[in-house]
Image 1 (cartoon, rainbow, N blue to C red):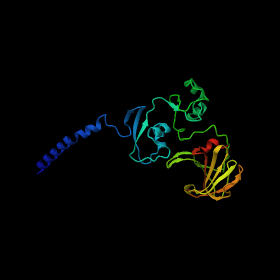
Image 2: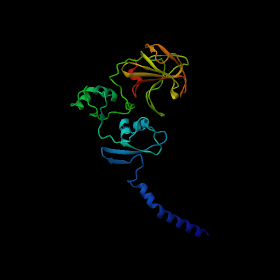
Image 3: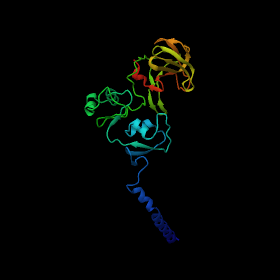
Image 4: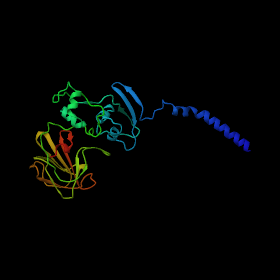
Length: 284
């Protein structure tokens, strides 16, 4: 009985090895590539494949793999509002030389500040480029080792054409800055406050909207010179009406917890047309 059992075990083991050996070999060969490390050669350069996992967003992928956020969105036909799916395959552009593509309104000074590099060094690397007369689409060479991570968070960069000066609408602790966060892109600045704290107009202008805006809750929008707007959201009470002209520093509302909010705070935005800007760049 024992001999028959042992013989059957040996036979089964032999058959399993024959059947599975191709699979084992395939897993051990160098040609086997997990989905996040495949490399593809296409027109325009090399791309690494990445398989989206639970909790991923464009920002943390760009940060983890040292990929420029704009380049990541561009090569995958995505934008800041795109929602990633678990299992989705993304192309990560492999860095074959540090370059920056000029956008509208940018100067060499803007680029040096964005990447935290020395302006003189940037000019030496780009002797054919004039600091204040760059063309949209021009390629600017960056020093080797330049980090693109912390400053590649926003689709809209600071605009030197904005001359309006803005004051803080309330004083408090910043609880959520402008930029990418786990739930997506945050287009404003959240400042903590107590219920009923006064909210002041950041600068003078004409009130163009008051009322409830769904996720924003009770909201005030003020129009300013140069097509600029400021938005104040999650308010408790509103003390102005549409059409009112207000002065900078005038109380327009009180801090609340309306709309999609997890506690008393002010959501503050600086806008022009469809663009939203990082308030910290313009607040004095």
